Length: 295
Image (tube, rainbow, N blue to C red):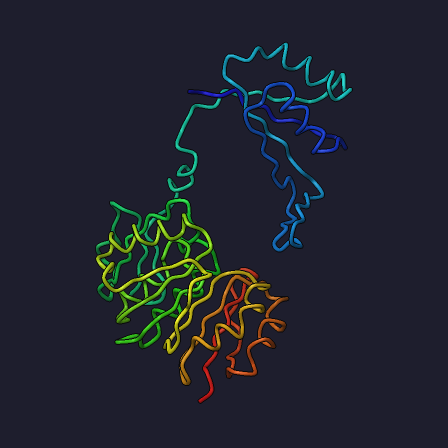
């Protein structure tokens, strides 16, 4: 069914008060987004901070009378001149809407990430190694700089016969790419059940289910991995440093991403007790770290 979408112009109004007013007047959902360019990447545990400039958008049933709703919101918020913009929104599979812009992408020389039904251009050389991907509700398509940094490292690595651990596997993109590039086995961990579902689905799509296992992040990790991948965030990367070190064999490699340039030093410092760390690789303000476990 379609919806009536309402955009509120706040002009100094408290976003949470606007949210309360929308729900009180019958909204079925309210969304707050960044109206400027001030991302909040790692709030403190339990904190839900808002942006300095916050946009509020609400969805109502399509048959909601616009005039009555306008009057109700202005009365509720005490703003006779409250700015409102209305539009009718056709119903869609919203969790998949963004995928309309997902196209085949190359990482390094051989590796291509392709949504279902699409292929690399016919002139692609050398012969491509393709990962067919549907992220479902999980993170990881290669479109984000942090994932791209990991994929490019995998494309350039010697993975034949290796065992790989993917901490925070999301869609399974990194573990599956490693398998398609020659790894013998991979194990994915994630705290999100949707990620494990997406990883299992994508493993089947790529014919690697027999070589890819997965579990919740609280399950035993195992040890002796040749490569440990972790594309998460800076704080958990620091917290998990001892566990990641214990999982990686002497002489093995770690590939860490999900951190900003300003966080590279603190994350590196958490790993230097076990690893010889390379110069950070940077893309669009994000950083990838690579280290070799000392023997």
